[in-house]
Length: 419
Image (cartoon, rainbow, N blue to C red; front, top):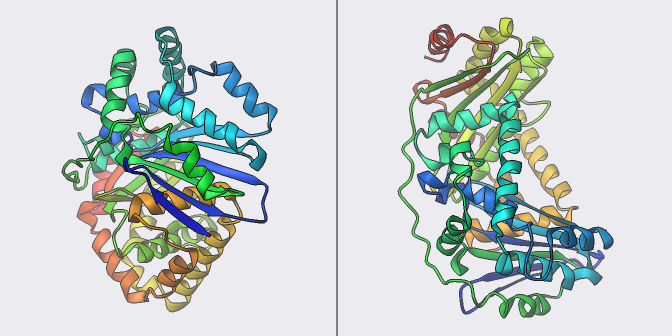
């Protein structure tokens, strides 16, 4: 059973009671992320996520870890380009503890200057680690290629120069602008009582500033940009990307199926052609990311340097021949994959909580599993083909490459293959 309450200050609290479990998955979601950073704040949203674990008025950082370990629970967080989430999973008997920890983190973190300096070192290590992971790096590069100069095109981790300038004042200023009641969603799934959930949070969230989000203009996408990062690696890591659908676009069900068909599983066109039929790659897949006013559809493949030209050629062959490759049988298989994956994900309380929060953020309402299934089942083959043709215009395809490639020569190759 779903329940939803909006507090007088605008905070939204939603829950789903699952009577047959003993656990609770509780998330504090903020509609803010790296997209909301000023140029000199690059990486600040992610840095604040780290700092909320460094101690509060009631708990030291060590005590936060110890109390969660003692109850067998899990406390964590993540930062995205438009969202930040702090979440806990505990037994229902430890519900009040999870609430208290999350409230303390959100409302009473200390942001001690000594802790800020230590965490700068931690985040710089994380940044270095990401630079050393070519598969992670290429995904950042494709966003930069599609949206150069825009926050959506920047790495969530930020830059070394910006991180070293963070201080308590910058943290508090960012939070005052962005950690506001209109952007806050409390989502809880499991053995939860909704009225108790509302009571637990209503009073504690009163001091939060009341804000009205003012989204900036949509980003202007680049066309055909190529970004190359030369690395002495065994493989070349390749991403092709195009602007895609925003998070509330009515064509999203068709996009789910198109993603599944192109690179969403072992029966997908790319996996079958690149790996199973030709043996050119070990790993290939597609994925899509949706934001409030735009989106990104990406295709990834990693291969040896000598296979790079053939891999790119096969990908472009698949994209330009989708009308003949996407059959009625292909569509039905993709629908089955989506429905099965969705149903299986609902076995997890954490997945249900995430789904609940994202529905509230994206649509301002609960979208039931049955509603999602019905929307996907209604998609016709022609809708998928029309969407594919709208997305994959060769002139719009941007490219990111990390690996042992010479930039000038590869740009010429990529241009020939794509155009």
